[in-house]
Length: 116
Length: 116
Image 1 (cartoon, rainbow over the protein chains, first blue to last red):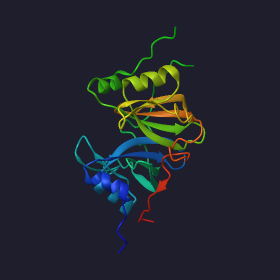
Image 2: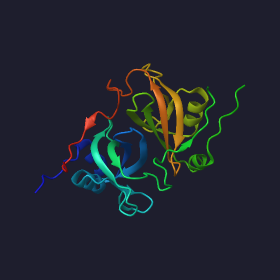
Image 3: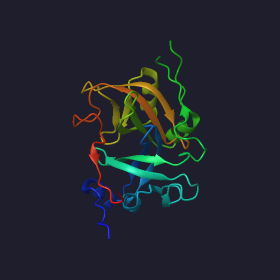
Image 4: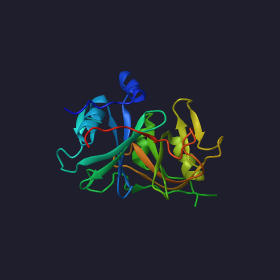
């Protein structure tokens, strides 16, 4: 049996009061930021145990193993959390497109700026 | 006079119902993800107008021009929003450390995984 995963105390305290943590997925090779999802304790635990990135869908209120339907899975390479423990950064191997639109990344809409 | 900035309609609809958008700052050169902040309409407008990245501090309930106190500013290079318009990805030139701890990035705490 594998040892149980250990969720850092600072993150667990957020889960304990019903908060989710933001989860940023970054392509481990290209370094492109692919998407932003959310995790509850079950999603983070499953991700750490299996290496298959799993989010909590806020719209559907259910666990969402990325790519379970589409085949566009995310395999976890490494994971870190931020200084106030409300976000995690996932380095992943992305199979296919991260975005449901078929684009590689969800951040494919540029905004015009005015300061140039 | 510069033209007024245009906030994409999908994002503006979120602001109109009181939502914030998540804002991921990525170093435009190293591609390191530096931090996750939040923006309201005023923060995004100011960022687009000035090129000085400005967040909305949820803990202090005030605009927070990154580096205004510390000197560790973020100069906007480009910005994109995601497919469901609840997050923006900022490419920035980071002056000094992004994290208040003095680390380059806020994501400096690795989590052990169990699937290797």
